[in-house]
Amino acid sequence: MPQKQQKRNLIAQIESELQTQLSTLKSAALESHKSSTGEESKAEGKYDTRGLEASYLAEAQAEQVTLLEEQLGRLKLMEIPEEPDSVLLGSLVLVAGEEDELGYFILPVGAGKHIEMEGQTFTVITPESPVGQSIFGKQEGEFISHPVLSEAFISEIW
Image (cartoon, rainbow, N blue to C red; front, side, top):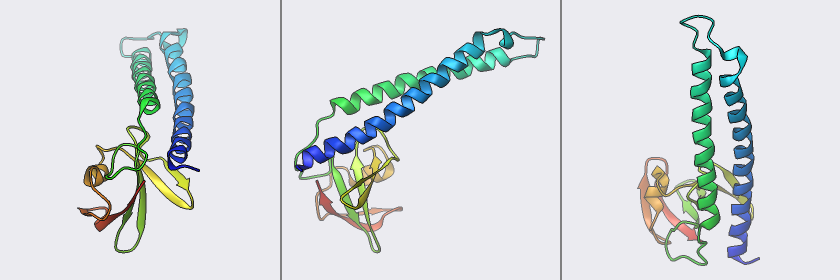
């Protein structure tokens, strides 16, 4: 299977997880909105703030829905590099340290998710993350220094 297609498959897995998360968040936001406007949220006294608290929660959840929808849009529009010379958005990267080798998938969203490819686990990170900042733009064979990674080097980029 060509690397570009493998990356598309991995991105599809991330999209699926984000879609599930979005669906759950939309349901929760709808329930919070109903709670904030329903009969049970009416104040029973001047210090009763249940309705106000529920409306704040609904508003925050609605903002999270919008943010997640924007992130999914960015992921769908992202260009996938074929064989990058340096670590770019859409790169799969292996970083070899003193004791182990860590895999990263550089994406604009989905940080912290884990995916498997050919027996290697890759952690999704963004270029803005601390590790992302350490490896973004680096070339294969370059050494990096980072508190999490110690002394390490970029062993492979796809």
